[in-house]
Image (cartoon, rainbow, N blue to C red; front, side):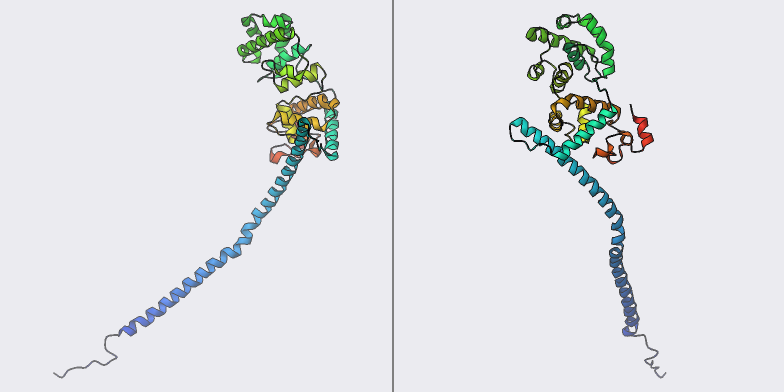
Length: 321
């Protein structure tokens, strides 16, 4: 049988015939992938300005708040540094005129709000104030005022307090809390007064702070309110309000004492002290100050307290005490 030759057209497809379409498809696929990659790189670049717009607005607001706080801190630091320099014997720069004028405006505003400021601890003598101040630790003045009339009626002098029956005194002091410990404190303090000062309360700061359980705050309270000696007594309310007014650091009583005293004449020390205490109790509360009902708001760099202070006048008035 004659052999049958296959023509090139009928022959098995060559390798060239197989790879040509495949190479073309691969090229198309590669081009598509490259195009997508390029688009992906361009997309974030185009979206970036939009994504950055919102944070930029927040950053601007935060920067303004930070700048305001920084200015207040610088003012407070200047007042405290000037007072510290004066105590150290250096030539003080002193608060500038704008600071003292602002302090005077604040004093006037507080006086208008609280026209007859008085210490809210009841007392009839320096001894009664000293004992009441010691008892007021970690309790309310109202509770102290409930027990001191009974206490002083039974033990009118330092010698009587020192010689008291501990059990009987504990029963009287029970409403103020920590009554056992406070009984020990009162009796020890009274004994030292008898031994060192003939039962009388000393009239100088140095002698007062040498008494047991008497620190700067209590010594200045007694000097200012029992002896009419110019003094600044920094309790938690004074520290908080003075800090918010940029007059001193909240947690440093001595620095705040120096800062406040540098802003006012000595004749105003006791009045501003009492006014700051009242304002802290009535209006400038620790957690939610009533900024919307506060006469100091226009002068206060902390008004609003970054959302913590109540700025709505009606809601703020409901917070007043």
